[in-house]
Length: 292
Image (cartoon, rainbow, N blue to C red; front, side):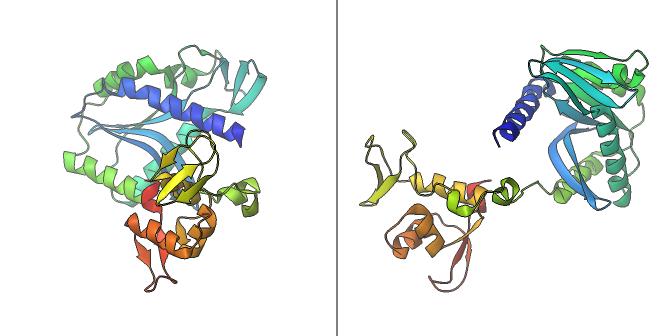
């Protein structure tokens, strides 16, 4: 779990670092979409970033690798040497080409005018050394460091002279892809083989991480004496992310360690959450708004 978290944080930081370079792209000429996951041919393909212009689309695969990278076309692999030793990864050049294939098919299925799609692998860590086989021409062409994004954009813009899309068609593509987007949201407990009974429940103090008690419409910590009126919101957000985005009064009572279901009803009702069910006993609240 910690290993996956570290990978996620590295990827997130890599994408975040590119925001600095996106601002140099002409805003009126390009629409940018991040992190889309679309089903095609019974499987999902995921794109880190799309830059959509009237002449072409750029598909970015973003890697925040640390160490020395070697792109090997002989075996279609990426070799990394770092403090962890020697590691082998799938070649992101081949990965981004597959994404381009799927995206092309999806756009054609929805009657979008055929537009050139360029692909780039962006290495965001400035201290990462990048090399490749002498025969791997695509590595020299498609693998860049973040500061090269603008020059690559200008290169594509000079190459493609003809407008393929109108402004409204660009916006249509963006709306279409966002509509087709299905974010990855696995059952975390099943994914990691964790039983629900193993979870630490209750409302935890934001100062010392100790269980808080509900006293006179406040949450109070018996250790550091921190108080809060809204500490339960964070606990319910955890419930939504880890267990379910649906919760009943009884489930809320048990999870927050409340004395009565009426307390749970009051807290859930005060958040103005959408719900189903006509009576207090049968209500099921939707917690989606707490995580969006």
